[in-house]
Amino acid sequence: MKDPAKPLALQRAARTSISGMTTLSVSSRDIRGSIPARQTEYAEGISPEISWNPVNGARSYALILEDPDAPSPKPFVHWVAYNIPAEVTRLPEGLPKATLLGEPQGFMQGKTSHGNVGYFGPRPPAGGGLHHYHFQVFALDRELPVPPGADCESLLEAMSGHVLAAGELVGTYQQPVSR
Image (cartoon, rainbow, N blue to C red; front, top):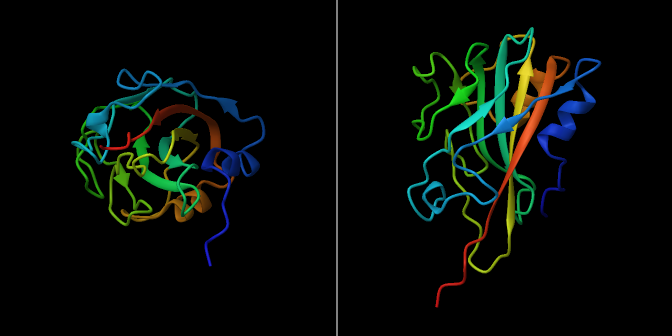
């Protein structure tokens, strides 16, 4: 039996956020509608550059990348990053696939639905239609007490009641049918 579909992290966090959660602006020089092929698992699978505006009072940031168009699980988690220091408002392209990163200093990455740690790029089935990838960034009033390599559910549980602001950037990708 398939797991039932869950709402995206942004919708779930909004229900348990601090009263008066504001919107955070998220952008990328790499993603202008569609996600470049080099950032998919069909090519290099490197993480895109992601940036956001700073939020007053934030002690850390978290990022969750989800694809609600995947067949299972719904949504498919492609990236979990957390305890990003408050002074960091940009992740560079091509971050290592490691649980604890030294640059930017000290932030952690967790498990994807694929089971790996770090960014797992888009990989929709060939001819499977257009998929939407939600890069969701959360400003938090604390660092999260979760170990390196945590999954999305653990992160969302730890974020409950600590979200100051949130926003998203949606990129798309469709793998053409090979002939």
